[in-house]
Length: 222
View (cartoon, rainbow, N blue to C red):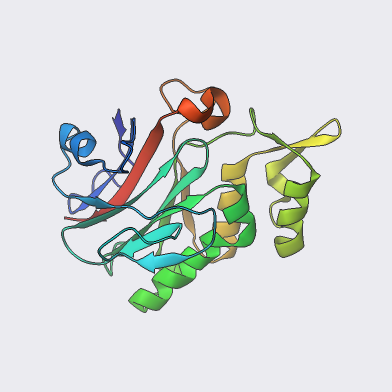
């Protein structure tokens, strides 16, 4: 299943959200070949942290990779966490970011924006962001530790993403991400796809447990 982002009309940009089983070695070559993607995709070893790095050989421990090199694609894998793709069309630089609640609360999205600005010499306002399929507020009730993790760093910035459910809260993680990205200076933020838990055709760790597959989300320049 390959669903293109709103950048579909930009022929130089390879991008998408792809759902399939991830191999034990973390290799997606067969999957992306079947989907018609002609380039290898570099992915990090995701750790639910905030580090965003320039793509190089190997699989570094990080939660985001960037590329400004022609013929290079970067991606992240998710199964309820958010895949966030960022691009500066003018300067031909892009990043793929993995953001669960821990990473979002700790600042991985703001780190990705700062990283791309530093790498390109551009501005946050030049970036476009797409937040891909992830768990929605319809299916994501969380405890007070999650609420406090966001409030401790960002105050009431993500208040619109929360809804009280008895003694717990429902979190619309992608709305929270939109708030954080806009506060970091990104003016173009789109949310793509349904909730991965209750939406059809997506892998969900929350729904299926350890046997769940993964979505691959990728971006880069042909």
